[in-house]
Length: 357
Image (cartoon, helix red, strand yellow):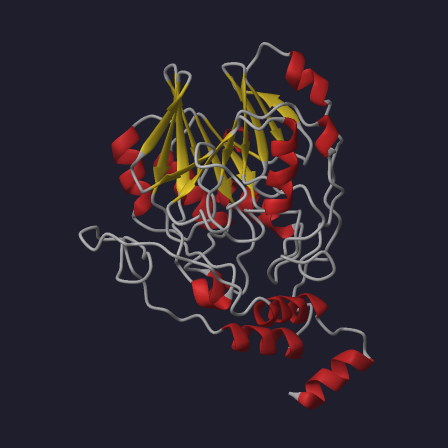
């Protein structure tokens, strides 16, 4: 390993992203104030942590993955290019009477529905990390300043990983409007302890929260949670189904492919729109159970069967081994191989605003 490390340093191919990920795990070890009582009568509640509905064999080996990255840096045919983006006109969202979507990168969307503003997994700082100096760095600019954000009504959190739950962003959002509701799975109170008990709504799978003609349902997906080494699966992960008027929107969060998707479809029926992740999938032997690849994203699209799906979780942070620009290319290939029209699974540019038809 030392020989490989010296060689990589000498050729300037050393993977500092891998090193920074390892350091984050070490530096945050033991920083845990977690307390939660589990309901052992529920299938997904264990004695000391939550678990997936459809358990899968644990084949993850973080050290093996990092060693592979040292030995075979940049082992991809596709040359990585920068993600194209546009700076959104936030005033057009504020002043519009239409229902709108604005993708701000990764899994962060501004949704304007019934004149209410919802933000999903808000991350508007420079790193997906507990630190400002180390960890996966944003590959596109922050497309909207905190001062220019519209007044948010509801924050949706899918799970506690640093690329989805950024406490610095949430604190800045609350400076503008302290009467926001933040919705998350069970067990997030210790992370979001700066929020009042009236602001933070924690839900179990299949529970919902009603807010001014909007219904927010927390639904199971296959994933996991952790912010430090000692809190694995101590807080609950999931996706969201938003119901309003006669429409339903599915926000998948992060997920590996599982029967949970069929369960969600059977419970809620017809969907108008779905947000589905397509990135952070390589190497497959390590990522398969936690992150779908573009082909599996198309399988989810076919099961949920919305009028339109929107790709997310790509092009913003370099989290895994595939080139930053590969996921949309593979998504197009997967759609064409299944004879699915490309305009039913949209690939937006970060910053792009579209109507919810």
